[in-house]
Image (tube, rainbow, N blue to C red; front, side, top):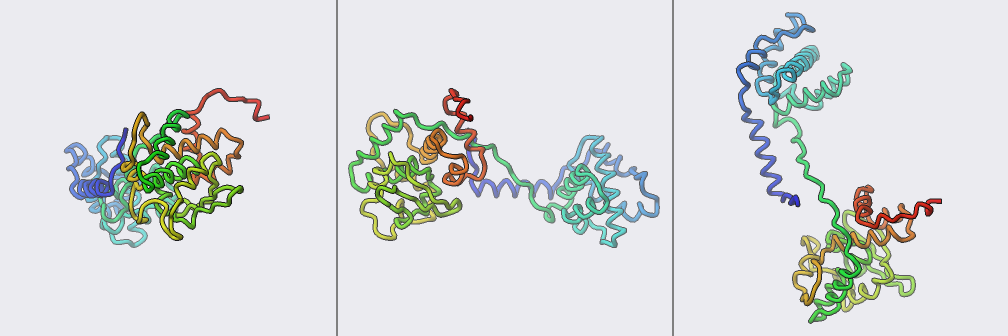
Length: 318
């Protein structure tokens, strides 16, 4: 399983990336010679000679190593620098090797996106401080399978049989709201008592705050557990924890719980997935599922569906 990098680790990677660009590996002798002898066929001598010094300064820092790719980058760079000179710009890497200016050139001269990519690559190498850092992408963490009915029975037993009232309330809040309303640790962090409205026969409604605001009804089967999770809370008290800045608050509640007998690892995210699987297999329109789940795309839904039984009644689409 791929581990998510911390903010500190991401900062270290970015510093290392910028350092590598600030201190590039010298060009191989063969490419250096190609650069020195390069004369663009599209430019006359009067146009080429003024831009040649900055051309050599930029191309000497490129990370491109393939001979063909290097030649194409040289051609793209020469044409771009000639345009900069015609625009009256100061010909130094810090001035001309910037993304906005490159984009203006591509638009004005109707160059291809491939040309734009070659110039942007050269800008990253020649002027790392003047262009946005490349985003560091991480592998997507796949959604875990929902809990089975037997696993949920064990989790419910554990939540209801804690040795103290405080532990019982905390576990019932985590399990009830995650399994019954699809909240995860991020949602629970901001949840206070006024955000959960018990309307009796009309159900319990959760006004989720934070980065994914939404109004969610608790599944009827989990209303009793949510009510236990709300017992004894003062008017403005947080449902879980004591601070909205704490991370992984659901996991901290579970860590303090007394777990006797066989029970799977209790995770708010997996309880949310189980809730999502529940509403997906119920008579709930997809638009409603998206609204109450706080999802911005269907990617998670497709991953959850992959965990469900493949016995689908195609006739239901009639």
